[in-house]
Length: 65
Image 1 (cartoon, rainbow, N blue to C red):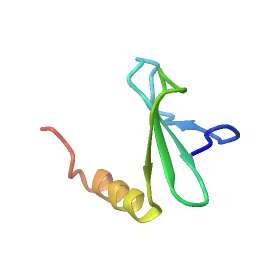
Image 2 (image 1 turned 135 degrees about the vertical axis):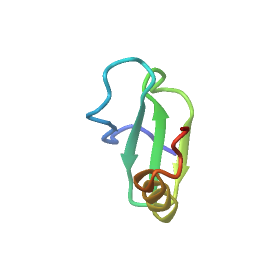
Image 3 (image 1 turned 60 degrees about the horizontal axis):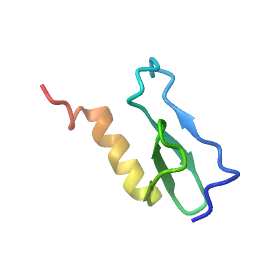
Image 4 (image 1 turned 90 degrees about the horizontal axis):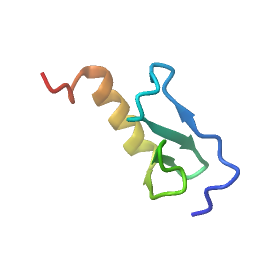
């Protein structure tokens, strides 16, 4: 998948600690990459998968405590 020309976004809550991911929305899905390695591997999710993940985050389903 061609990664050039995409708009990558990082959370506004990111404090520059180096442990961030960036997200790019595309016509066919959502791409996620490691902000420290922008030319490295990219994970690809369908919009439905991404929305399910977001719902889980907002509900606290992934909290470690």
